[in-house]
Image (cartoon, rainbow, N blue to C red; front, side, top):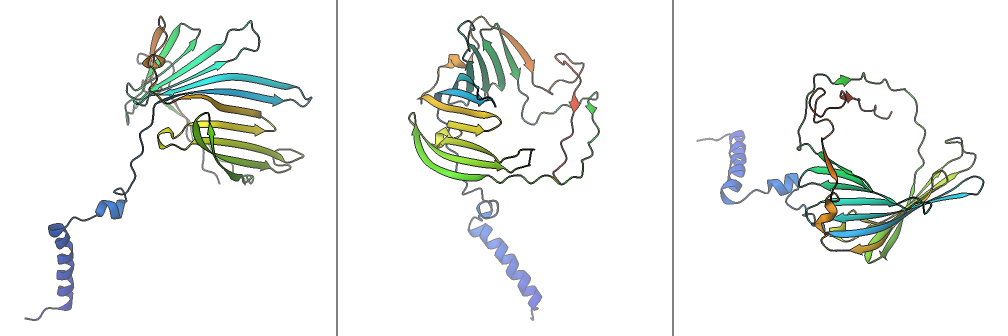
Length: 277
């Protein structure tokens, strides 16, 4: 019996498809999608970090204005995050004011309050993928983009500053230098802005910025530096409002349609800005 060359090729292809299924596993996930060799992210370590924040602005007449504050960030093993910022008063007659923000991914809430104060606002976040279709939503017409050639943006210079230990935390620093050329914004001389950021190198502390410095001729110099660091589970009380505070529960923005209980104003859908030309 004669077998054509076309039939032989089809048979060989069928055998090549069947044999791996019967005799061995096929690495489709690792070879095609690349997920088999994807590294598992390290779990975040709980900690409490304290920072000193200062902002110095120099006026054209040489007078400087200095503002200082302190900041505390606490992160627990469940992913709850507390950030508090205390403004240092300019005079002794003014009491310090502390603003506290809590993000709780377990309870899916976002809370905030001030000290001194009497109320704590708790916002219940929507479930992932939840959407509301409101018939009364107002949609603004799309904005017609202006056909203009955008100005050329200055290209920053990035420098690697190496590693440094800042109050017990090893961090790696980078400096970004941006120069605005003469005439770009009406300036008669080049404007040089310098930004530094020192980020913790430990895998469990990803996202922890131990020091940041932003220095620009227009905005002044802002510094935020780690002053105390404790790598331990923070006390659960730091994620709760102070005793005696009134709890005000509110729905997540956009989760309630106008006219329903808890709605304050009609929803306004603002179209996204046009893409750059």
